[in-house]
Length: 548
Image 1 (cartoon, rainbow, N blue to C red):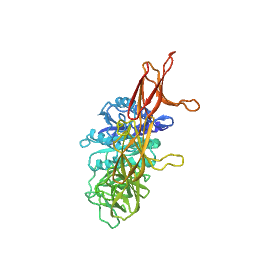
Image 2: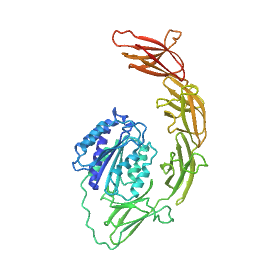
Image 3: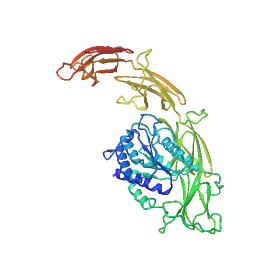
Image 4: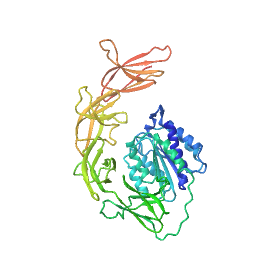
């Protein structure tokens, strides 16, 4: 079912919107690791591949179409964004072929991917459309809402449509703003059938010819005036208020397209006489009313948002002078929320608001009262420290390198079953570190069959560099002609059993092990008898065994 709905969404977008505006279109396709998730027994990437293939088969040859993919070449990279197919006519088959070869594996830098697509479309010079297909949220500390506002405020003819592939309602809100802030649509893939039907009966049909202009007795016949409070001043200098005047049909319902609109606190326009739905939007706050317009008089539509501005500086400690760019901040109000990373400004409804902040596992929540027309400036202290781990094989070295080692920050106290809660983790030493709230913890490390932990103390706003001695060595085995190499504990238990520590199907193998005595078991194919060799492992040393 969801395969059919996603197909309907993409088809509607690809066929409908070129009819609305001349220009090029780029599909931005999610290639992150989560695309291997399944829906009704089929992976999301298979559904996306099949959908694109079917849409491409029926695409008009003169459609100027391109493809950008992200997260498909590297794990853990926020720069893995590729202009796979530059926008041009006759690219439909190439788009489908590329999607068939896509191998999801990485993160979700969707904001920078849309930005790169916009740059490729040369939005300063041409009308342009981006269709983002994503099954997840931004994971690279970027703000898609801010990008949408930036692109729209620049005055270029750019529209972004977002297809939320299997996203929840709350997740959809995190990316819908990218579409809303550029005048585009946010479509959920799991209810796209009804949306596609609506598009086919309205937007997808050939646009009706524009009415011939008639002489008007006034310069403009409607003016939208935005105010934060009933008695407050007009927001004349604001470029963040979006106005739209949408014709009402015979049934009193608004049509699919706006007759006129733009970003200004005071917006004036001349539209044909008739009945309209006037809409104004400021961030996540909306106002709408119906109005009848004539050609010989100017009608003022006053939108009172009953709102204020919240400016938030997230910090790790009260003494910090700069905002922490890795902090996520949200303002919750009127059943919704809006926010971003680092220094954040949000328009919110007047009344009780809730401000939340997050750096890694460290969180904070505050309640405030916001008055209409007020600018509320807040320092939000999110107590968090950074743990930068490293490890050695033995006291005095050598150091453990590479990404095979796993580090975790765990609670200092274990529960009744001996388990400890994990607050952060990473593979490999150093790197970006792990953000955790202030407190006492255990830094745990695991490499191969060796594991160890050491106590650490973390302070807000400070960098804690800690080293774990995993007290281990490496046992390396070479066995020409081997079918499988296995590592066994050197001593049998009281029942005569010898614990198997794992192995590999190869002629070479190595394992990181605690100091002690072990046995290597080499198996061969055919009638060749297996062989065993004793070996001892010393912390900080490499033991090599050859079995011939």
